[in-house]
Image (cartoon, rainbow, N blue to C red):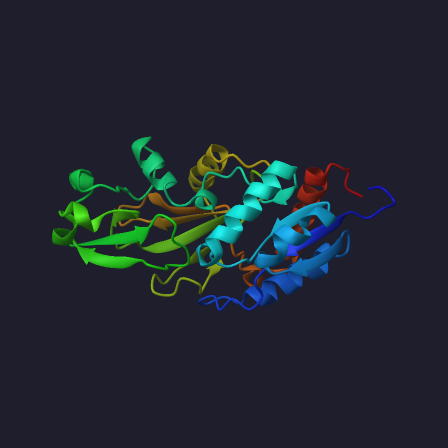
Length: 279
């Protein structure tokens, strides 16, 4: 590291009322640790475009669902790409960063995902179940998600900018957390009705290969990604979503040793993004 400390603009909506999570606590912790090696300022997502050129990198963390300020976010992305601003996560992601249309692409390519369609004529490609999940293509944080009976989905008018999936009575949800392309830890919700009551999860080699496949598919060299999956009744894992924009990390569930290791890896990744050697 050079004698001049590099600077970071840390983007977070500290007041966003996330369900079952405290964004502010996680970001207070992360910024306190990143300040050990970087000069750092925190700003609201709506201020990022005006401030980003004064920093060596922009770290987008718990910024809330961007659909609440989609036009401003799109303008930030466009300006950052045009001006070559270093953004973490890199803005080339193909997961939730670009909407949920990737679930259609992965379904068509035969990846292990919850089967997904967006047209009435494709309804027969999904398993025949009593209830289906309808979610907006630009949805986040379960905003706009509905559970509907199959008869409502035979009408083309029921579609539009939405995705349709079968409702799966999964055994549990599990999340795999990556920095760049390396798995750092995994957590799971053993009770399906308590999504954010998370516990440590020790992934098998097969689990690791499952999660790694999606991270390798994505187009991010530097950044934090969360691969969310569910354990189907038949035992296999199916992708729920690939969160590559601002994944909540549930750092409060980790042991101090695991948190330290995660922070160290993020610091190394940020130094590499900025283009300098780590201290």
